[in-house]
Length: 601
Image 1: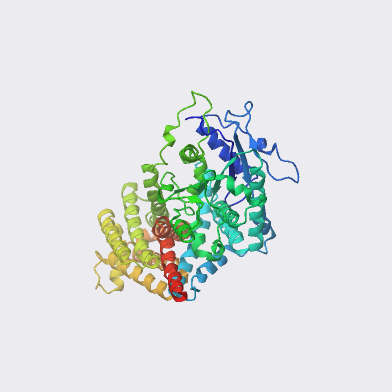
Image 2 (image 1 turned 90 degrees about the vertical axis):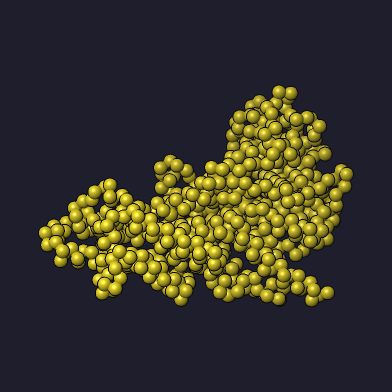
């Protein structure tokens, strides 16, 4: 690295969603810089409060060595802190709309005719999206309990529900409450004006995360449309813009009114004022951040001259294991910030023997194991929940009937029944989560494979226990050997018909009907015991029945959780991770805009 770029540079952090302590985000940026230089991250939190006095705006903080890690003295840090503004509304408790209700109004908004031509979604599509949306929010609440157990086990700590609620609340404040959005933007402008006065010839680099990318982008666009003056001079000094986990594309589609006033650009590039180098980074396991193709198209249509942001400046990767948690994992990834620092900021070297930064020349690369884990772990969790549900109920029933079980055959029987439950769940849920016939065919195939695995694995005793009651009810028209398959098909058909008639019930019909069938089979089996073996029946009556009732409640709950997690995972991979939902909404809205233009012409 050469010293050719010795101008003073300020790294301005704009935090994302949630309860953010002041200077917490800029501290993370400073840590990333230290890792880039191979320096220890020995910067206490209080160090960032050094230059702040009561009643004053945040000022640029410069690390000084010692006692700070050794970094160039021409690098300064500042932060735009806006979390206190939406938190005021949250604490009031009477201003913000409840998350699920507000999210459903967003879906209903898509039924409004865009540009007076046609709606983005049909009424039946809105009903389906609202049902799935309600389930997803409910699923996150359930998963919060599971992550609580993981936290207690010392595996990881992640407040999933809090992330969702904070995100929805912050988005609601930024997009719907114009008064408070303006307060946030005014805070952004104040910090930028103050930073611009730090040193002559200062270059400013904005690093924004999550909803902070929306704040920073709106602030930049507004400044570029204002007449040049001292208040807006800072935008002339911005040289780089880094967005991580950005939801800008979704904001462009769902809230087009936010972007309609940016047309008369006063900012134009020149030799001493090059275009702003915009680089976007997102992990494919992040439910909030994606590529920004639609933003690039919008910049082209509005003829915005300010940004150097081509398709190859959008960096998507699979580096983080847990979906959802990936949204906050960027801060611990040296490759992400190292690449932006090395290719855009280009800070000066400390000395001739500065550790090599050649590894940051290329954008962050995929980690194959993380990519595979992000697919396997969620569905593995579904299978584990179904296995647990089967295990508790099966063990309780057979323990009550026989006084114990043989573990070798018991485990294989539980595994086989779990496969059948999994196939039923897949076949019953996928048709209500997507209209694509290819996925319907996949669900049928997976169901048939699960049935085959069931017959291959379970013992004849279990097959008889399930098949005999069905055969008796059908007056022997259905042989016991195929009765489990017929029963599973009928169960899925019943669930499908109920869900078609009452789509807002979500996964409840599957669990309710499935559990009724399971308990019915169990009851028939117990009744048959009373006629087959009087001695066994007498022994059963001496054993307590409460473990069976408790296991039945556990079975009901775990199957319900497994179905919710499956829905969440499928929707995540089908619509969110592959961005098909955003693409679909944009394509639906775009023809309406084109048609309006033709009518005006």
